[in-house]
Amino acid sequence: MGHPAAVWDCKAAIEFTKDWNGIDQVILRNPQGASVRVSLHGGQVTSWRNDQGEELLFTSSKAIFKPPKAIRGGIPICFPQFGNCGSLEQHGFARNKIWQIDEDPPPLPPNDSHGKSFIDFILKPSEEDLKCWPHSFELHLRVSLSTDGDLILISRVRNINGKPFSFSFAYHTYFAVSDISEVRIEGLETLDYLDNLSQRERCTEQGDALTFESEVDRVYLSSPKAIAVLDHEKKRTYVIRKEGLPDVVVWNPWEKKSKAMVDFGDEEYKQMLCVDGAVFEKPITLKPGEQWTGRLELSVVPSSFCSDSLEPHKRP
Image (cartoon, rainbow, N blue to C red; front, top):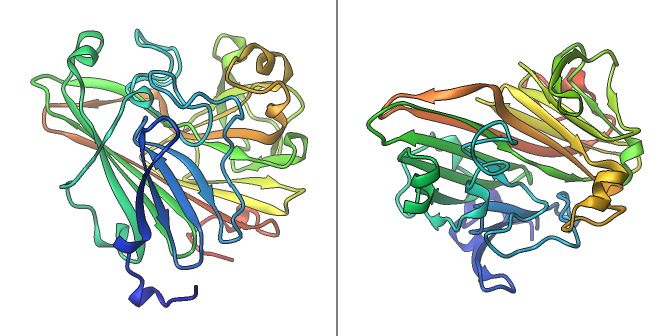
């Protein structure tokens, strides 16, 4: 494999295929053998594998890969609403729609394409969407895989409406973990959070790190740009870096709620953890012609790594 990055043909690293329901999907690869799979159903990343072929994202064995049902796992795009805090369906409609390949995306800085295999998607509202959310928009998404195996998602929402609109947003990332009781999150210490299990009561995180012994459904507010999810059994750490996404949602349904979900296995809560870069507490308002950008970068490092090393952006 080890081709130098200078001669790596990013276009040749892109494969167009279909899933078992005939829905188009795109596979990105890097020279070391890492890969990312994205479905046009929701513009959703459904797989991220490292150069050893290990799957880093969780997808339920009971997930339904057929619109309009959202896919339980991977990285759903929640837009224009996160959760059930507005008039729309849970987490908005973007994750349930068929997106298009964006053949002519607005330009991004050169370092967002250099040395990466990437693909651009676009979602525009249908007449049906405009009936329930009467705002014209373009949602551009770039999914990139770096030579280091990092996964980068860049979303841009543009208002092409005649009037302002507001929205919330999240990359609802399902991480695969070995055992939820052996996982901790660093970087959320002392932050205020909204507890969705207590009518969004505002609380303050007291622990040095967040660990899991029961159901958790929280929105951490004004969070740092980088946080870490440590998996002790795998001896690896997911590092989450984000821009334009001030909040972090942490969710694990635990036993009782798992059994109530038709598209989720009864015991699968042990192998997953959602940690989302999000805009929730203070929705984004765009005037006509304005654009918002939200960027998420996910990497995996050995677990000797700790949150003290998160800033600046350096690899151990």
